[in-house]
Amino acid sequence: DAKWGMRGVRSSNRHFMAPPQAGMKYNHCCVNNIPRGLLNMIQASVMNDGRSIYVNLFTDSETEVTLQNRRKVSVRIGGDYLKNGKVEIEAINTAEDEIILFLRKPGWSRSIRVVKDGKETVSGRITDKEGYIGVKLDPDSKSLINIIFDLNPRVTVFPVEPEKFDEDDWHCKRWMLLSNKGSSVQYKYMTWERKSFVQIGPLLLAQSKDIGSKPEDMFKSGSLCEDSNIGSTVTAEIREAAGGRYRFQCVYEVAITAPGGETSKILMCDYASACKANEPDECHFNAYI
Image (cartoon, rainbow, N blue to C red):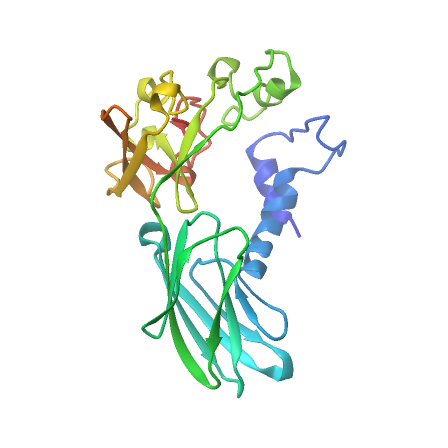
């Protein structure tokens, strides 16, 4: 009913409306999308078409699915894929006929391995043309399925040079005039040079003061997009979070080796943990390198 989103918006600051947004006086993206997003996630996690089951998300969950003719299948998803790339699925088919369990092949993984009851069924690179892998669930059976994703770090580069806007342009004003100081951004901190960012699995990484990053390091000029850095290799190892105000999902030591052989190391955490407070400090975290 959107009450949670309304309470969150109204209690944090006065209602902010961007006139060009939609022309709606009392609507707000948080009010509409927070509750809808929670429901959509639950619905999308495990779906069915009456005959087969589709696993789309790999967050820990337990689902009971009723198919045609009242056939029931339970699907329990576990593992720690954000840290080790591994998902464990326990599927119990109580029906008297075979059922296909389709597993989504996410775009954030370059390759995938699927092992059912100790036997590898699929192994190979992920292509855009193939969205799911089908695994057969035998009649009246219990199956243990293991999925192994590729968590090697990837560097994504701005595809084009960013367009720089004047300070009084609406593209800038909409962020500079936010009534919530924790959400506003000063023009001098906006980035106009081509940058890149590091991703591990579905996680976008960022530097943050909460893990000891310093502004002079986070916001220094230059990037991996420069000609001298094209072809750099990036590796990462998980590190325990030392200090900081929050419990982090993942903290990595990221090593960047330039084509000339020089290696630099930076500490990065998952983007969602980089700043969990309504932080007025514009230099608290940065995802761009």
